[in-house]
Length: 328
Image 1: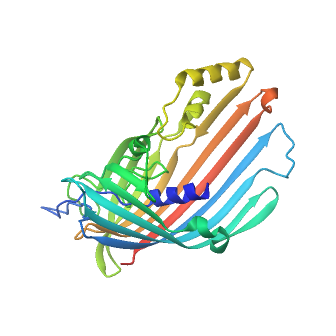
Image 2: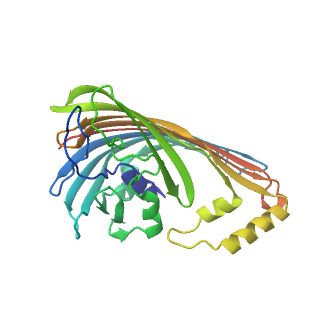
Image 3: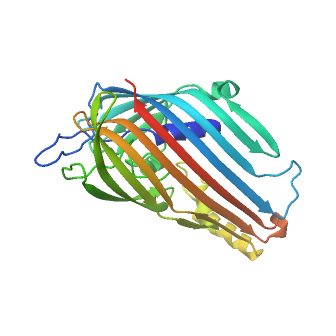
């Protein structure tokens, strides 16, 4: 479980974008400029706070089932770009090493201290290799030498974040040249395991600033995602193994049986509003600094089947605050 979460963090931070031209006419035409032979290293810090509240018709044997998490991690990310095996394809190798971890997790009435020494081998460096086309779309990918299933790649597309934003490691750039004070909007419909989520972004070139000796544009972004309402059939389909075809007939039978007993299962994933600030070097097409705050919330409820534990409700709240800065 921890290993999966760490891979998710790695995917969350990957920079996928096409190469392009520099400014023309009034303003500058912004394009990510990751060329074969480019190597970029970022220092990344991530803070995660969250709670899981559980209520139901049961008497837990080990105290409260509620969970509270307050965790901070530091990592070094290295991106190496190389020519792909075909024209217009680019290979990106991402290595991620967790260098610091701390915080607490409260569960079952006890507080557990989190540390890098405690997790040990589970936090060994990760290597992911992505092949992307000239639009930044993922063509193939592997993590620690293991290929990712095709179905998962379709979900990632050109936006590898598990938090459903349509962003690269920085904003989705406009089609037209922009100057300080200019705004643009973006919209994307992404599919995550069969569920469509619409994301809408508003972006502003707020100022010119020098960061790390580079002349950058500070771009301020707000990204909103639409909510999801999922029934039992949706949740069962989502539990299928990656790359495994859903047996819809079996899903329908399970739903019918559950409902015949008077049961109901549903989940509501709240819409979210994330804020992001990017310091972008337009000359080299490189993100120099990046800050993101992203909340998430979801509720799951199961109703009234005595043979299956009666009523149960779970409410989860999570906020992730990340920052990264180019170090080499």
